[in-house]
Image (cartoon, rainbow, N blue to C red; front, side, top):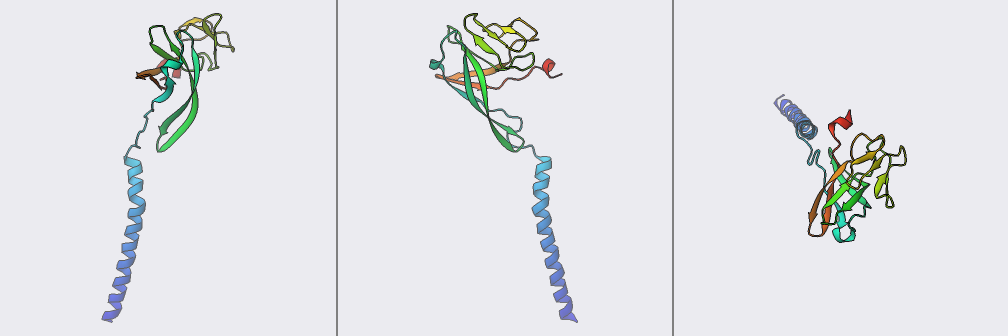
Length: 164
């Protein structure tokens, strides 16, 4: 009788031990998921837009870029573009490629020295300011950082008024 309880006690103890390991194996990652913010959550990475010497002054240039950003635990890579303008004193401005009216892709009309949206004829100055049309606000801007001759862009933050 004594041997039977020892074997039974061992089996019950082993089962409880395995159940505890399984619970810890599933429970700890679940708790971490629920209680800990993901690494880089909400963090937007800077995009290398190329060499400043490749951009002519007062001649906007549309650049194709590879944008990496973190969405929760997933790292996403997507192709984006930006209009980059260098003024004669070397200051750089970069604009989102979408019109602020309905999001159409606009183009640079060099002969008129302005950006023109083909959808509803909004026109923008080289500074992004609205010249005419239904566009409610200036072009959205990328944050720009210049390190040496490299231009780095951070995607535009859409104004609160534009989200509603």
